[in-house]
Image (cartoon, rainbow over all chains, first blue to last red):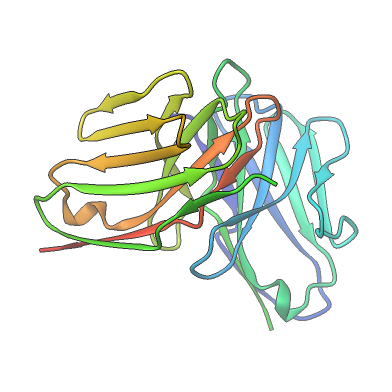
Length: 116
Length: 111
């Protein structure tokens, strides 16, 4: 299947700093990318949907000024957690969808963010 | 809103079959998916089924869909210890590419 690379896999940052997470589709063009957050032993919560060249669509309850999403090209989307706080510590996963009859979404490896 | 539900835990013996169940509420679901997540990793797409099908088989995996009851199941034949993971079902309405995930079922395979 298609490959989605997410970087970094782990990051520890201090409270108040910002962290950028990258999501790249390596062998296909992704018109749509998704960012999810996963709490321990829980399901994935969709945070936002981003389409290349346009503003991201955020799910209810997700602060767009805190979680900045940029989808500058068909192969790259970034999530920046601004002014991070310990409660932002979580596992963040991106996915990239191929355009076609079937919604095939391929997931990155995830980023474990710890804010200290 | 849309909701997808799964049982939280399943334990089976190596070599037995595993059946993981999922129910969903969205009647406009067009595709339903099964993903596998190993510890600390992203999600791996295992298989998917189109809503006008009632069964799909892919090697050791069998997906059954009862659209009337909005019930989806994943059967893993000859379960191996390497199958131990969390399994998520998800649906999409086909119009938005958004996936709605269940809470995940943790499968433990005992030797």
